[in-house]
Every structure is written in C-alpha cells, then in structure tokens.
Length: 285
Image 1 (cartoon, rainbow, N blue to C red):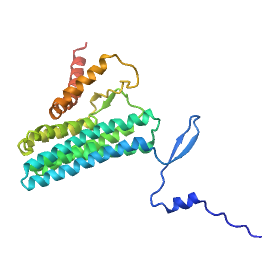
Image 2: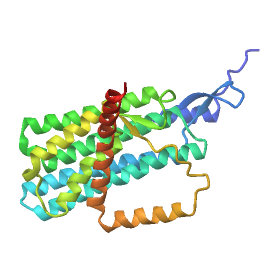
Image 3: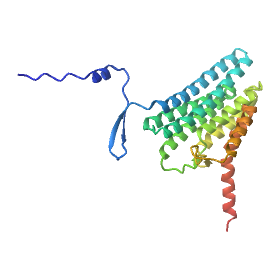
Image 4: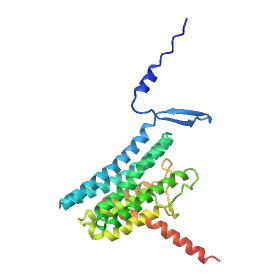
C-alpha cells in the first residue's frame, strides 16, 4: 500500500501565495541559544516609517517650491520651502523616538536598525540637499549640484560609519556631526530666511559654504556630545521640568530663528572644542 504524500499545511500554502516575502531574522534568546524570529516589530518601525514619510514629504515640497518659482509665484514658493524645512524637523523628532521606543519596549532588531539608517538617508541626506539646491544652490549651476552632492555623500558616509561603530564607540560622543544635526543647519537656514520672503538666490554663496561645511563635518573625526547620558526614565530635580518648559517657550516664540541658532551653535561646538583641545595640548609642558 503506497503512502499518501503529506499535504502542505494551510500556513505554508498561504506563505507561498504571498507576493511579499516574510522577513525571518536570527537572534538569541535569554539563555543565549540561537533562535529564528519571523516578522518585524510594528511599533518602532511605525515611527521609522513616519520618519521616512516626513523626508519624502520634504522632497515633494522642495520640488513644488521650485515649480512655483518657475511660475513666478514667490509667495507659494516660500510656503512650500517652509513646509519642506518643517518636515525635516518633524523627521528629527520621529528619528529620536523610534530608537527609544525600541529600547523601552525591548523590540530592537537588525531589521529596525537597517530600516532606520535608510530612512535617515532620505530624511537627513537627500531631503536637505534637495531643499538647499531648490532654494539657493540651483542658481550656481554645476557648483551648486556639486555642493549638494558633497552633503549627500557626507550623510551616506556618516551613516555607514555610525553603523559599523555600533557597540564599540563611546556613547557619550558622536564622531563627526550627526546627520540630523547637519540637516537641522540646512533646514534652519532655508526656513529662517524664506519665512521673511528672502530668496535663496541672494544668499547662494553663503548657503553653499554652510552646506559644504555641514557635509564635511559629518565625515570629520571631531567629537560632538551625544547627550545620550541623560536618563529619561530616572528621577530628576523638580527644576528640570521648569527648564524643559522654558526651552519649549523659547523655541515656540520664533521657531525658524531659534532652531537655526541652536543647530548652528551645536555644529560649531565640535570645531571650537577641538581647537581648544589643541591649544591646551600645546601649552602643556
């Protein structure tokens, strides 16, 4: 009597019919044994997806602003440039949340880390470069797009280096200007001046210097404080909440100018500390 072949399970039939491959990731359990996890964690990756969407939305608005300028509608162009810059700042908030949510809910994964890095490349690499190009650098011809590419390449190299240093670098510091901070400088410049109706063509040279400097700082070996030593889950003095309220009040009093100033100060803090360190070393016997 011949044996009947095993019928495939309904689950395997369903998987074979799915047009999207199911993600399987290897990991280790609490006892150190290798296990295979199927699927992805939803909550942290929702924040990462929102970060990616914010970067994409910024790109769309930069393109819309360029179209408005070509049509001679400067007012609409300023509005679109503002939306594009705001979207980058929103992406920063979302980027800060996805990692913290993953750690707080113990849902870290290799997939999430890679997805976060790719989303950051869009939101803090491509989107700011395109925003700067649409607002000011486009009038500089080849020099303009070369400067924009320097920024994009700097962001890509910065993210790649960060990924290779996870687990070995001192968490108190970033090596090189973090890509969200560099994006904050670029988006802040565009938002602060376009909010006043100032056209980027009048500031092309200055914007080119700032964008190129941000790109170079991202791949530098200059240390920046990461502020990761702050424990958000621990107890803090009561005055800390007052400081937070004061910071929010100051930022919301004039968001474009205050955010630009804050990110410029942070971007400059690395080179300033580096020069002070060199000077101190030279004065030591």
